[in-house]
Amino acid sequence: PSDSIWFEQQLKFSDNPVFSIDQDKEGFLWFGTRKGLYNYNGIDLTFYPTKKTESESQVSNWIWKVHTSQDGTLWVGTSNGLLKRNRHCNCFEEIKLLDNQSSRSPIWIRQIFEDSLGNLWIGTNYGVYVYDQKKSEIAKYPLKYELDQNDEYKIFEITEISPGKVLLAFSDGIRAVSNIINSNNRNTAKQISNIHDIEGVKAMLYTPKNEKLWVGSQSDNTGLLEYDFASDQLNEYRL
Image (cartoon, rainbow, N blue to C red; front, side, top):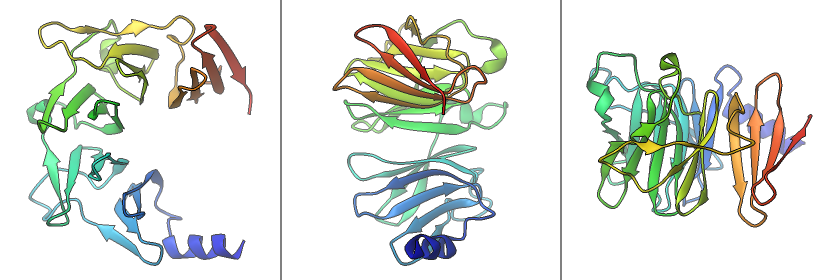
C-alpha cells in the first residue's frame, strides 16, 4: 500500500486524465494525457514536448495513444496528427497524413496497432491509415463499406486475428479487412456474423490459442463480450 501511495503522489495526474500507457524497450513508461506526453523512468516524471515551437506545427498536446513498435520506435497519436520519436535528437517528427492539408476538422489519432507483417494501422476519426515501416510510407486504407456519412469511418479499436485479417471497430460494429491493401479498388469491410453490430466498442483483445475475441463496450445493452470464432458463439458478461 505504501508503494502505491508514493507512486500516486509522485506522478500527480489528479487533474490530468491519462488516456494511454506504454512501456518502451528500455523499460521506461510513457503516458499520453490531456496535457501532453510524459516519461517515467522509475524515479522521475518528465514532460516531453511534442513540438519544438508553438508556431512550428499544429500538432496537439492532447495525447490519445502511445505505442512502441517492434523496432523500439515510439509512436504518438494526438488530437491533431501522428508523431514518431527520433531517438537521435530525442525529438518528434510529424508524419503527414493526406487529409492533414484539407479544410475539414483535425484528424484524431485514437488507435495505433502493429500487425504481424510490421505494418502500423492508424485509427482516426476519418478512417484508417497503414504505415509501411520498411518503406517509411503511409497511405489511406481504401474502404468499401456503407456507413452513415456523419460517422466518417471513425475507428475506435484495431486488432489482428490472423496474418491476413485485421478487425476494425466502427461506431456501429466490428468488421474484418485484409491487411494486404488493394490500391486499385476499395477493400471490402466484411461482417462477422455475431459481432458485426456491437456498438460502443472501446477495447478488443484476440487470444489466438483458443480463437476468442474479447470485446469491451460502453453501450447500454452490452458490457464485456466473448466471441468464439470456432463455434460462432457470443457470450456476454455483466460486470
